[in-house]
Image (cartoon, rainbow, N blue to C red; front, side, top):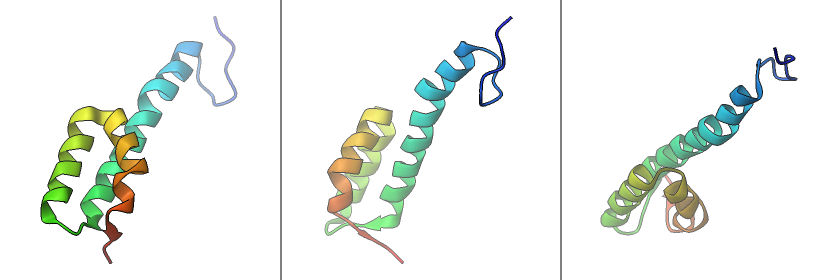
Length: 76
């Protein structure tokens, strides 16, 4: 039996799942929402960024975070 970790999870596998699955998925969802909320100079850019983030998951979200966010402006 594993001791309870600091976050209240029972085993190292739980922590592994959180770090490698849950956190990247939350980041991916945040970036997908950000793409949908931004206005881009060309309407096709938004569609392209949605497809990139949607189909490449975490890698696409990282690419959008560092490259795509600079292209658009946040809509009110």
